[in-house]
Length: 140
Image 1 (cartoon, helix red, strand yellow):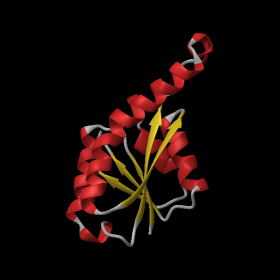
Image 2 (cartoon, helix red, strand yellow):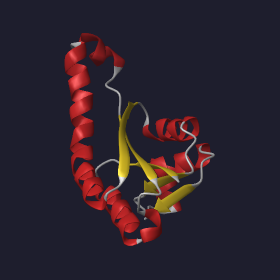
Image 3 (tube, one colour):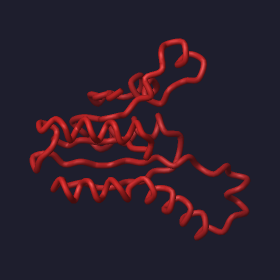
Image 4 (tube, helix red, strand yellow):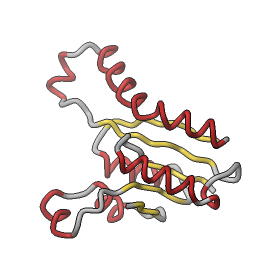
């Protein structure tokens, strides 16, 4: 199975990974994982005055902070995983990558806010569910 896991380095990502590890049907060599981290874009006016190499380094460093512990986990579990960084708005980018990559499953960790909180604040998970045609496993 080809699985896309959207990760942000939060406690919700750790909870999602722990859930997957605790359920052996989600682990093992018969699955190929892609760990996706979406870095918010630096505003265009700021990006215009920042050196391109420095901006790239910022994006790479931000993603590597998230990926470092995940790489260790995948190595220990013997999982085949690709690590992908994209830049942009999280929900739209996750949905787009899931669609274009022809994944069998998208796995997300969620804060678990109630309906009222989602109305007021919005939610990446809610937006992904609304825009994504790939099946989603949402871990709270």
